Amino acid sequence: LLQVWSPLSFLGWFYRELRQSLVDLEDMLRLLKTDNSVVDGSHALPTAAASVADGSAPARRGATRQQASQGLAVHLQNVTYGYPGTTRNVLKGVSLSAAPGESIAIVGPSGSGKSTILRLLVRLFDAGSGAVFVNGVDVRELRKKDLRGAVGVIPQDTVLFNDTLRHNVAYSRPSATFEELEKAAKAAKLDAVVARLSKGWESLACDRIYVLRDGIVAEQGSHPQLLAKGGLYREMWRLQEAEQAVDSICSHDAEDA
Ligand code: ATP
Image 1 (cartoon, rainbow, N blue to C red):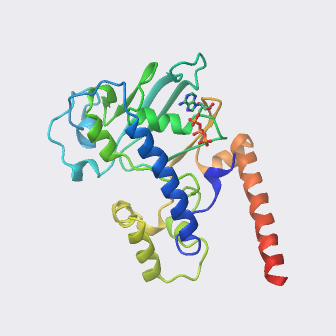
Image 2: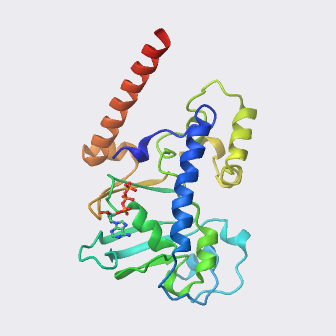
Image 3: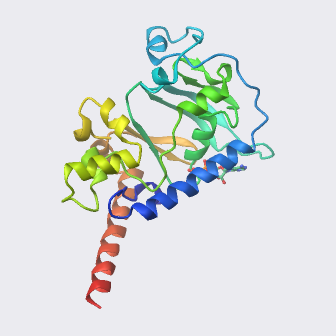
């Protein structure tokens, strides 16, 4: 339940996080290798700008990787999906959007459908009904290698969305110098992301949070809005804080012993 809420800390718990990241990445690579029944599309990934100008435009050939890295527009439109060989829909009419340069977080209890959304985004599977659009184009029309080259994975044991990027990266060592922060960001390949953000290190690393429960978007909004709403997000947050308090007491006890 709480995986997505554990703090990201490059400086203090770097090894633990790195190891977890590799586990997540291995899972993803394994899934990519088991590929696949979906038929590849033929269009190159268009630039985000082209799709913003005309969301229905056919994919423009020849977008470079650099152009793609300027940000993706992602839109899930009423997506429903059930895994092959099962009768249960694990996503039930999910709609969400991220404009180029915007960051969204998808959070929710284990099994609520977060990874399934990612799998549909990179076309490990195709939506049963509804559609996934990247830069305005239905992913079924796009070349899988373009999609997969443009989508990165942030491991689940991270929080980048309720505080500034600076505070997230320096979480376990608030006294870290700016040079240390920059070095850690470079090691984690976060430096290019920081450079793209208009507020740089002071950016609030997400714009909108989608809270999934049992395959539906149960809540959405900013961190303060969701806390004020008093629903699932707030409950998860409360549990997270309680867990951190227990961790902190235990680590002090261990130091005193
Ligand atoms: P977690 O936080 O534990 O990673 P999640 O929110 O990412 O969970 P998903 O992995 O998307 O959840 O799973 C959503 C639902 O789909 C779960 O009930 C899961 O058991 C089911 N599921 C996932 N993968 C498969 C599969 N390959 N075949 C059948 N059911 C699956």
